[in-house]
Length: 371
Image (tube, rainbow, N blue to C red; front, side, top):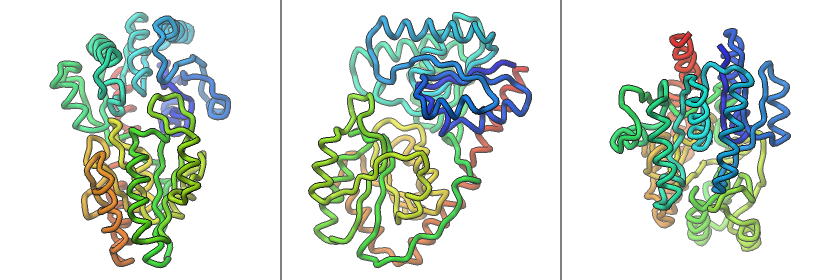
């Protein structure tokens, strides 16, 4: 079969779907990766035994003409490569490739990796996004969700038929890349916390900084690090000026962005993500747990799936920096053996529940049934 894999960034395809694409190719299918050409990550796609078809998809653009042009370009790409089935990701990737697939009269399989800003904030964009989801998901071959909260929400609101819905364990983790690594031995009063994410307010960056400010009054040697993209095309983006202000205050260390998060996980004691974004299942938290790092995240859809509270990490209340600080202090007060055991528990859970092979096998089984 000719299988198109669509997302709104090449970065997403390289970081989250490269093994799926290679597996499908190995099974004899022709794989066409469709995303914007962002040079660095697109180069990696071009060196794979697959076809790369660049199509501009704006992550947060709202100009109707530009959005219609995007859909038409997706339609042309599917026609050009005589695609049989579309596997799509990210909100716009799902909706726009769904419309294009319907126009081409071919099968498509969207993956709802969190509901994001478009469906969590009441606005005209929310109305349009809901309408387009309602239209496209009716024609989907199957609809994959990354957590049960989102699946039940879509079914309850009539956006998706329950007999088409199936929950996957997030996007899974490549356990051959993310290997267990013991927590570094250091003084108990100088822990290293790490937040890895696109630097958006919705990801809880503000709450993280406020919690850090509170904890530094108790533990001055504690480190609070931020790793992720700045200046992203998103109305919730944290500005470079704000980051510089925090770093000049000595509250946080900004590490920039990276193509390999593993060394940063290894050099941390605990990974934190106080997100209220509308996540699927945050990949960074799964990867952190795979490296035996305890996690602190919010008790909200998607995020709560990554933690067994008190066993592999802690859950805190969303949008509550005081509760986040309390859970971080709880972690600091743990003896080294308890911290290590949390990490071991997390790794075991990732191996049994969130191995990337589980996700890939689900896709392969679906494609096989369609063949």
